[in-house]
Image (cartoon, rainbow, N blue to C red; front, top):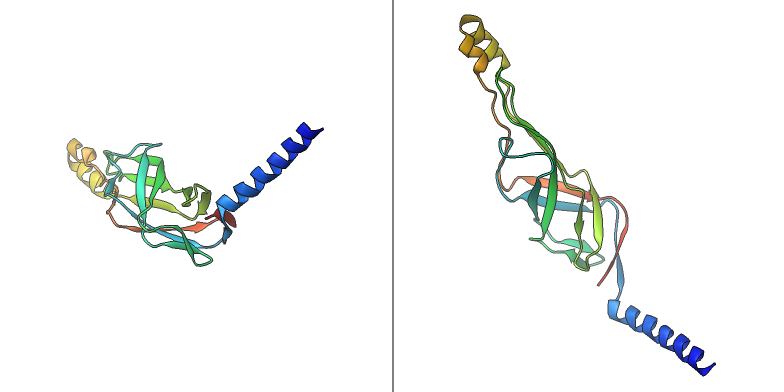
Length: 165
């Protein structure tokens, strides 16, 4: 009996000390903006579906007066689709999604609205017009899609998220 009582008491003290170590719990409210920017120039010629792309948080994200995601934190985006510019004047394009970010304590924060896309110019009319006079005209490419570095992107916190600090 003493052994069982000791185990129960030990478990209770362990739980209390775990709460004391975690500190307070903050709520990062749904709808909180997370401002980011692209790290490097992106080009549809070099992107493929599934590639990861880095973004950087450009402003501290604060919950209840405490910074839970500091400025400069790296965020991973993933290429959903990408197409290089092709003959017949078809321009390149890509779509990138940023699904979430991690807070200081390691809590995953799902984001919505953080989709990045770019499209290169189509030269279809030029390719067809030139193709009518020479076969080589049909070989005119469209333009690749570009996204310059430091392009701003904004995500929105999808749900109330509880963060320990």
